[in-house]
Amino acid sequence: MTNEIDGNALAAKSLAKFGIRHMFGVVGIPVTSLANRAVSLGIRFIAFHNEQSSGYAASAYGYLTGTPGVLLTVSGPGCVHGLAGLSNAMVNTWPMIMISGSCDQNDVGRGDFQELDQIEAVKPFSKLSIKATDITEIPNCVFQVLNCATSDRPGGCYLDLPSDVLHQRISEEEADNLLNRVEKMQTRSLPLEVEANKISEAAMLLRHAERPLIVFGKGAAYARAEHTLKKLIETTGIPFLPTPLGKGLLPDTHDLAATAARSLAIGNCDVALVVGARLNWLLHFGEPPKWSKDVKFILVDICVQEIQLRKPHLGLVGDAKHIVEILNKEIKDDPFCLGKSHPWVEAISKKAKDNVNKMEAQLLKDVVPFNFLTPMRIIRDAIAGLGSPAPIVVSEGANTMDVGRSVLIQTEPRTRLDAGTWGTMGVGLGYSIAAAVASPGRLVVAVEGDSGFGFSAIEVETLVRYQLPVVVIVFNNGGVYGGDRRSPEEIDGPHKNDPAPTSFVPNAGYHALIEAFGGKGYLVGTPEELKHALSETFSARKPAVINVIIHPYAGAESGRLQHKN
Ligand code: ADP
Image: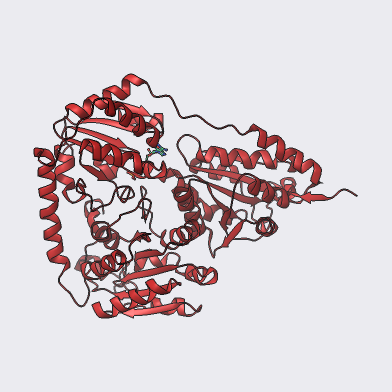
């Protein structure tokens, strides 16, 4: 008698065959067996409480590992909840796939259990949205979504697996034949050829610039361009500016770091080489008044449409690591270096030092009840004490993320995850879980506002269940932006005795939440208490929540984006 396998087993087999080692998701009808099959084939399945958080995890996993993060959801509502992660992957240009079960194809249009036209629902949020309409299509469909998620500009792809397809059966022999046929289709994509004259022009622009700047972002981090960028920066002596997620490709403490002199650097540079970072809101669209109107941009991006959209002085389409490598070769033939005494380098270095000193003077004050600065300094110093490998820092919240970005120091690549291009709040727990799973041996430190934490606080149970080395530090100022900041007119009306829309229960016991599941919780309000909690949790490397009580009126509404609220 020939052995048979069903669609669930074939989907799991296909994922394993094409290199998937981890999956994130929430099981239920009709995909529970798919998850179990995957586990039996050696794939680690991290089961969450909600698809939103597991989708965020899958998106960050794709960024950190370069292999698509896989999110598995049930049909209908599960798929809709998962869209949060899929859309986040698209906007951040991170590779991920979402696989959802869907209702029986024979019952479509009849109001079946959790029925939804999922292919249409996910289209605006994905690069590719396909359905396997028969079990024999599963291997090819799995291959297509995985391949598409990482090719060209990375992003999210969707695979729909109807319940009737998951229950169809074929012989194991036929399944293996299908898998082998698809495997043979795999081709290694060669790096895009970059026109040699464009590389010479880029080198020439940098060589003749009076005030050159190198900006790099999470596209460069994704491309693992840290070594080539370091070589370019150190041989030419050009100052550099990372975007928030580019931080760490070169250490924040590097002599040529312009991070603490950001306004001066972007406002005065005459040539800016921008590698794997979009000239979007985070970089002020590359326009005045933040940038000089005469700045010449050299953009390096894998996506030709991105270059067409921004219309830079010079566009180099291709992989960041590859392009910077050939730029290095070009410069090697006719090397140049600005040197420490170059007026531009000196100006940036002096401004950066002045700003760091001013900030340090603020940071060194022990303010109790806590503002944002005092606990952030204590966390910074505790992280620095860990040395290498540096922990992965996950950061979100308005003030918590803003202050964290300037105070916390990144020294190693891809060690920072935050709200990203979309300003997505609620990503913290999902990102932390992904970081711990993707980087065994590293500690993960999540520094979160209480509202960001609250989006998926129940996932602390997931931390405990899998015993992940994640320390979650909640900056608890009692609400979104903290405190009740309404004007008298805003407080009036029949519901004036309700709490403000920005308020949560003051002094909420978030630390008790993780204790309910057997994790370690700390409530802290003084520098000594915080130092003690960090010292214990950083050495224990076990799931913990440190609930840091912050003054409700510390910080500002909307953080540094007040003009947008
Ligand atoms: P940041 O938020 O750090 O400014 P963005 O997300 O705005 O970065 O930009 C990242 C850019 O990097 C995107 O435009 C994306 O197309 C690009 N990118 C992604 N992968 C690569 C790669 N391997 N090489 C070059 N560019 C890449």
